[in-house]
Image (tube, rainbow, N blue to C red; front, side, top):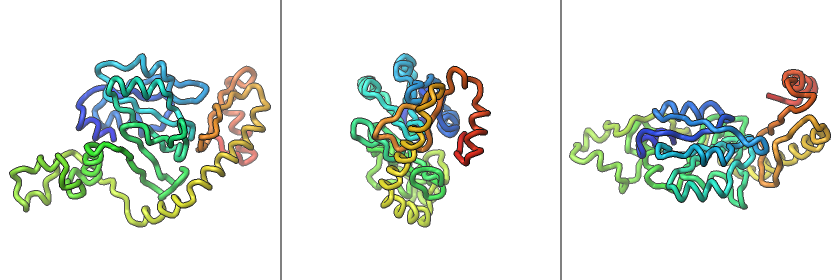
Length: 265
């Protein structure tokens, strides 16, 4: 997604969160774009929307928002303002398959969204992921970028094929029009993913039920500030901020959880 953004919009800045997975920031750097960090909202652990809007300048090429641990990080102010300024929103939904905002699934509101099918996530193909977009231009670049920069998998009516004007039929077979990668999934992964998709809603509800159980217990402890809950979240995990007597005692608490086989990171 970032490589396509750079191809389409050129140099510039991308507003990113301070709490996310390393690949979000690495992808911005790999594309030759500059990450601009904003702090989190301690209620949701997502980006502080006011800070995002304060950081938007004429150099901003996109806002890259992470839905942290299954919690929707969107805000209508952000959507309205980015739309008004014509700045793309890119959603990282890797930990939030099935989560909602205003009764819409996350990943359906931005210029592009990214999902991971790593084995620990809600839906798994063991490895891999996908980009979602309703921009035909972005889709064309994504198809080319995932296949070394070839146009073999790009729709025949795409404007990208103009880059092959005047090239012989023989040379077209090995003409790479953009710098690309080799990120094509295999059929076995697709087969696994197709089965997972049929079970998705039951996976989401299981995660919600587990979260409700743990939240009920932990919410009794006033020194644990829990990441806010809402019905549309599909928890990958959830965040805890330590306050008062527990401040500075993270390692001790993690060790206590793990003693009782509760995974904590």
